[in-house]
Amino acid sequence: MSDLYRFGVSLEKQLIEAFDRHINAQHYKTRSEAIRDLIREELVRKQWIEGGTVAGAIVMTYDHHKRELVNLLLDIQHDYQETIISTQHVHLDHHHCLEILAVKGKAADVEKLATTLKVQVGVKHLNLSITSSNE
Ligand code: NI
Image (cartoon, rainbow, N blue to C red; front, side, top):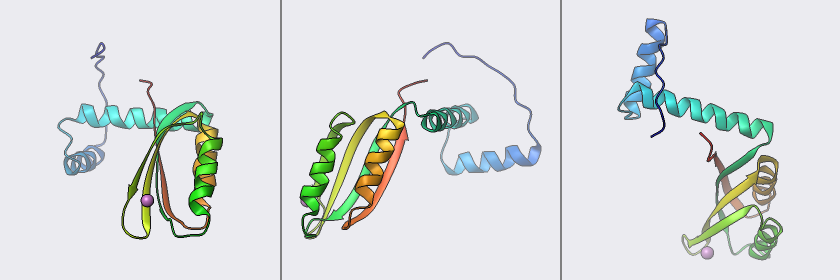
């Protein structure tokens, strides 16, 4: 681990009690780890807003019986070959496929890819999860 820096934080009693309940429910072992995660999350959000480079995953389900949908989704993915690092396809049941796309690139490109896939008829659900390799 990199050098640790310690600092004190003053909080209202009510606020820290609510925070402790929240992080206990999430099974954090220490406040420090919970605060570290909050800070990282905020910095990733900032990168996202400022249009920096982000990494993440697009998780989507779709009905592969919809006419032309599979070809359309593949065409879109080929248009974003520089953004998509890898893909995983799972045949969920007779009708549905689950696809996980690992992505890395400019926030704007990642968002455009996710939106373009999401609006296609037959795509049932799509979630974009963003992270960063920084900090
Ligand atoms: Ni499938």
